[in-house]
Every structure is written in structure tokens, then in C-alpha cells.
Image (tube, rainbow, N blue to C red; front, side, top):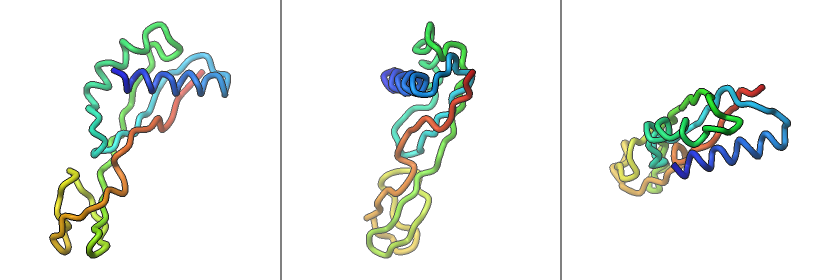
Length: 110
């Protein structure tokens, strides 16, 4: 729930800066490695946005795949978990390079 409250804070800040009054759609980009439960976000969204400028807004979630780079051989690859082995050399020294964040990608406003 606190993540959705943070999203609402971002929306309110954007409304102050840009002068819009209502949000129709919120696009969230959520990385596969971000440890964010997308279904929990959907469940909490309507409750948290009630009586706000985002009340009734549609929530669109864009899931982004995890990406890692092997510290041993430099191979970049798609990963589903934080502790995968490199597909090229078998090393477990992968560094996450993408897919570990959540961000408000876009807002449709009035």
C-alpha cells in the first residue's frame, strides 16, 4: 500500500507542476526484479486513490524484464531472478543492469 501512496504523491507533485486537475490513466513500469507485487499494486490502487485527483483512474502496468551483466565475462543477458548463473560462462557474479525499479512512466490527464 505504501508504494501506491508514493505513486499518488508523485502524481500530486506532477499536478502541481503541470496544472492538471484529473488523472485518467497511470502507466507504471515495474521491473521483474523490483520485488513489487503487481497484483498487490492493482488491489490497493483504487483504495489509495479514492477522493484524490486520480480517483477512478485506470492503472496500466508495464512489466520489464530483468537484465544482468556477468562480472566475469561481460555477457549481458535477460534474467528472471537475482541469483542466476551466466548463460555464457556459468559464473554466478551477475550484476543487475535493468529491471529492478518501479517508475511512473506516463500519465493521461485532463
